[in-house]
Amino acid sequence: MKKRYITTTLALMLITATVTYGITFFHMQKQTSALVEKFNAANAQYERIAEVRSTIETLYVNEYDENMLTEGALTGMVAYLGDRWSHYLDEESFSEYVQSLSGNVVGIGVSVVQDTNTGNIRIVEVYEDSPAQKAGILPGDIITEVDGKKVLEIGYDTAVDNVRGEAGTSVQFAVMRAGSETPLNLTAVRAEIKVESVRSSLVDGIGYIKIRSFDIGTGNQVVTAVHNLQSQGAKGFVFDLRNNGGGTLDDLVCALDALLPEGTIITATDKAGITEEFKSDAKEIQAPMAVLVNSGSISAAEFFAASLQEHGKATIIGTPTTGKGCAQRPIKLKTGGGLILSVDKYYTAKGISLADTQGIKPDITVELTEEQTKNFYTLTMENDPQLQAAFQNVKTKIQQ
Image (cartoon, rainbow, N blue to C red; front, side):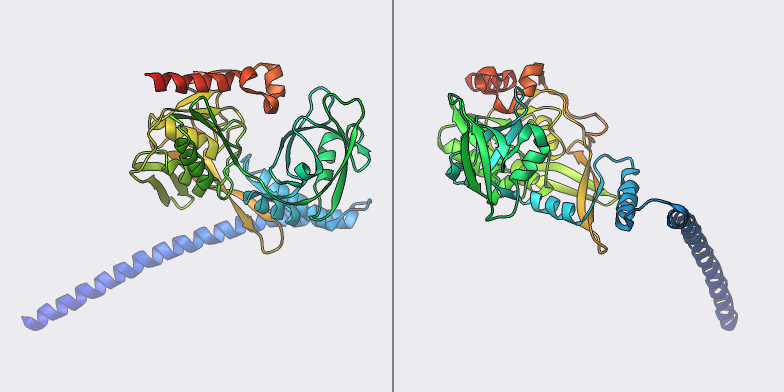
């Protein structure tokens, strides 16, 4: 009986092994077939590209640049993903993009817009201790010439590009200033500028914090600004994120951590379905808040507003945001250039994608006139109805 039991056991083991092998072989064969099918499909696509390239080389009668053909193919490949946020960049553009994330640029240290009346370059802000400040340039100045070239002749964008250049080189301006009939001739020496993404001030007991973008270090700048304003007596806050194009996730989380109660801030899910959750601790700022947004508030700027809105911490004022629900990563390519590629889908603490909701709908809608929109960067408290509404909202909460 014992031998029979052992024989039966061995027989069952052999049957089990055979079945297991059969199942494993079936799955391996299925996976291999899928890989072969995928390879053949990809190969067919590459053959199409190769055929076009070969036909151009053989028959095209005019001169062309081989590198430009490749750049165009790469640009088109990413463009046809149908994702407005993903791009291919050549080596120089990719390097500039990565540098921009640090908030460092080479220039003269000013914020500019196109003057709506003349089409020239209007100085909105001059940074502290910048080449522009040392050269005597003031907010409100109108630059009409850059290095002897008239702005209106070479175009606004080209003129702004000409202001940039290598650190240590000089650039000359013809500047029209209010009250002066003749232009001033000024010279500035370009330098590397650290653009502060956060500007703050105390107005009637309310802290005003303008966040231009979420560059590396912005989170800490926001936290510092909040604490400094509190020490000056701020009883509430207005966060201005209008025309903030977003930035880094780490700095968004850092800024919100100081403002929110303990809990989830945002979640990110990648292509493999792996979800990462970002949380805030129990320390939070307790004060009335309002957040200003518009259609130029994108990505991190939207999630900043959405997080405060979901937690009931702030009133959102302005106009609807863009509605961006994915995050991009800069990926340097071994062959040169790089990709700005959407690699994560973002969700609010309540699991909402802002892409699905077409952005954030303000609690209080306040629109600017066409004229106010044109002159947005020169608006002051007196002629900015959105800013007025935000301060009034916080002031009312403080008085309650």
